Length: 498
Image 1 (cartoon, rainbow, N blue to C red):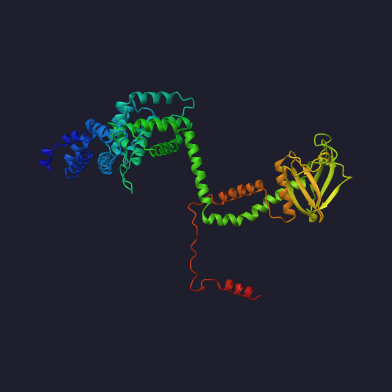
Image 2: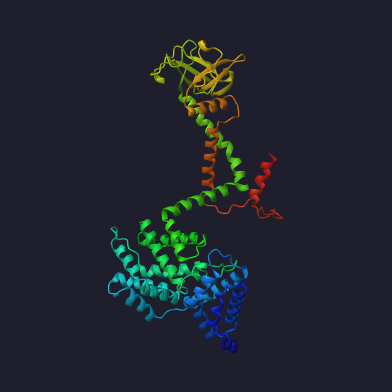
């Protein structure tokens, strides 16, 4: 291996990546990965350093990942291996426990001038406890140190905005930074490779410091989301959860650069994420409501819900309603007359009373009551266009502007036209009368109400259940029933005999 590296220095291979011939690129990447696998540990470290330098990144970006170029499957697979080699370097740091001196140097020397106050002491202890976990271990310290070194302006801006908050709800930059490093470790699968295998993340090859740059993106995102959520100190975990969701959703779009990722995150604010969650929740509920077990439960519950809706419709009839009258000698515009219709308490009779347009039901004249037995009603028809005759002056024509319901009463039916433009009243009275005369027919409005109540009832019943099985496995019957107490067994036998 040493002979190969002497004859073919690793850095010389990088120059061959600038070739336009895909076969050359594939062979070079394959050779690079083979050299790494065969090399000793100290040589591997040198190879990893070459994989992080600007010439390698530029060669990959300009030749291998050219815009508009379809990536060869073999080259993509070799790049995924290179990506894993780079992530393994981060893994070594993530699994190393930092020393107390290293922790103090970062926290006290670079992020805070001193740790004098009790509040700062508590923050330091929390920071120490978080950073000695592996992961994130030393990787957290190194990332924070690089952040302070290369992004001092961003830290100053965040600190200033934090201190200017009127509600005084500040967040700890050191502690949150450790959590964000851990989040990034999880997102990139630094420690645990995904079961389905790594997928190529192009943006990792288009930055000199991809892990640091992604970390900075997360810090800015956390700061923005913290403001949007109006969060307080006890909400840190909630904000972190939202940030994780935001970054995961945007990474699904496969941004090819850090800048593209930032553009996507700019559109995925906290209010926007709430809309996404609402859609996901609705989709999940819809999926659950379509399972075989839930469909069976729905059909079991439906009759009870239908009865409830029809009972409501009957109550509407009992409250009564003032309908317009059709008068043959007068037009609808002049001398409009009204009558008040009501279902009696025993649900056997409809009572109709003449009234004026300004008269309430309580003041209606009861002297001219018309009583119609429910048993005599043949059918009820919801009146639409052309269902009501006009005045005698236009006999034989239909009035397309009048709506309401028509009752057909008796064997040679007498027609009662109840005029109203209130669609809700028309539906309620049709549903109520159909229920009284035994016609199994619901208006579209009633069907929607039944479905709405059914969904509410199902959601309440399924509130604490998850992954509802389509069928339940019933255990086999026991071989004997000796375990049943004798007095209970005898009582059951005696009941059966009776």
